[in-house]
Image (cartoon, rainbow, N blue to C red; front, side, top):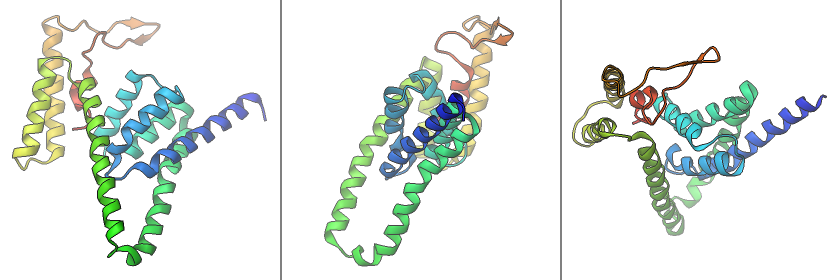
Length: 218
């Protein structure tokens, strides 16, 4: 085995273990994982910077399925390709599977336990804080000007006060985002992409098409 293969094997093992540690704190849904994912990937492992993880979480929140598994797949693939993605999926799914099996087997013995009910209520309360922190960070990365603020406020109002399906909101956000981006290009508020080294460079500044299109997975 060459040094490169050994290094790749080590990285894949690290990906698996990182998401294996994160998975058990996912009480309340995948959004509760986001602060832990950011801390592990950006601060501890340094696999991505804040801008990259924000983009990955935006895509993960917009795609079908749970944001935790989606984010793990994107990050694993970004770090170590297909094998990294597979390791991340197994790492984030295995602990949850084992815990749910144990809970299913032992549920009948604790379903009437006052202590067990109190413990789950405490866990749910803590999860609210996790989700609030994740939402605040995603809000900061999504809102750059009045246009994005209007999209966020409109989507929030629609979710709270109407019965519009979230998938329809995503479609509306996509259309609105593309339209706003094109209008800003016409008004010269957004410089057109430039060619650098044979590739199209991203639009400079805080305004990027993907951020308008998906609105961070609302």
